[in-house]
Length: 266
Image (cartoon, rainbow, N blue to C red):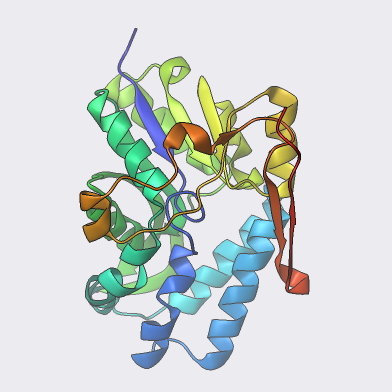
């Protein structure tokens, strides 16, 4: 048996929000984006999530991202992220995810964050969680500014390619590895490992998970780092794994409505 690793998607899996959109307010405040950009970014993020693994949707999102940040100073972005990380990200880390990450690390597995958000955002979030290995979108940089080119877009099948390269480099046995995600766009990643689990899954991914008898985890307790160090999550991690027909919760964002359906325990 080779070494093992656990690969975690970020948005709605480890944190209870979109990492890309979380920094919209300080980006707007510092003049990097306009109000119109904020709305378009939110819409692009929503379409990406609703579109799942559709290649055209991912390509449009990638191209919009490249055009939006062209000309931005890289150091300015890094400074904004560093200054606002405590306020905008720390309170939204799922306690259940933090515990699960710690359990994998205690078992001797490497933990890797795998996210379509930019490396300048994902890597500091990883450091907040005690995770140093990151696979994230990398933008082209020329003279300290983003060039408008995307060197690597960490979405869909591209995530898997990077995961396989890392596995080959480090000697991971992917059959012994774990992966966690909420989005159907990460189905290729989940299929690439021997131990896939879905977290707060979208409707399409929930259906796949139930068909394949993959564990379904519901993370509901975002807790700031200080409290996570003092307290265990209110719901034990094992209780977050839901069997077929229990605790189905689907948010329909485009209608602004929320429905919750619960099946009686067996």
